[in-house]
Length: 159
Image 1 (cartoon, one colour):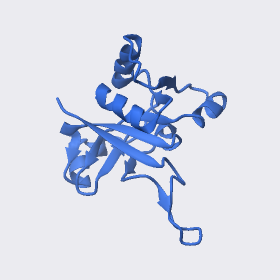
Image 2 (tube, one colour):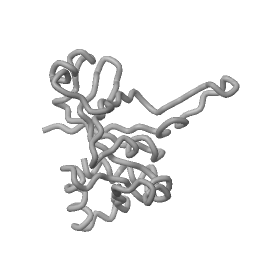
Image 3 (tube, one colour):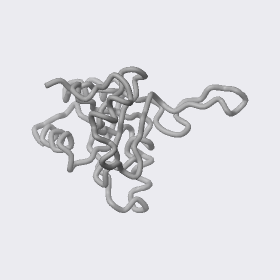
Image 4 (cartoon, one colour):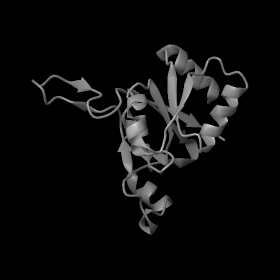
C-alpha cells in the first residue's frame, strides 16, 4: 500500500499528509519516511491541542485514516474515531485516503453491526462515509467538499 500511496501522492501532487503516528499504519509510514521514502508527501501529525494545531490542519493537502471496515451494498466506509485518530482528520483536509482491510468488507450494515458486536459498546460517534460531501442547496448547483473532503480515496489491503 505504500507504493499505491506514493502513486496517489505523485498524481495528486500532495506536499503533505496528515497521519496518526500511534497507529500501525502511522508507524509503517514513519519507517518508510526514515528509510528514504522520497515519493511520499511530508508527514504531519495531529496534536492533542486543536486550537494550537488549527492553522496547520487547514493547510493540509490530504489525510490518511484507518477504517473499521466497509459496506459493499452501498460502498460506505466505517470509521470509528479514537483519540489518536479523531473525526476531524477525515473531515478537514480536501483529500481523505482511507485504508480498508479486505477481511472487514461486509455485505450490508446489519452484517457489519453483527460482526463487530456493536451492541457491546459504541464510540460517541461512528462515521459512515459513502463519498465526498456534496450539496445543491445554493441555487441548485451541485458543490462538493462543503462539509468534508472533496475527494475520498480507498486503498483495500489484502493479507
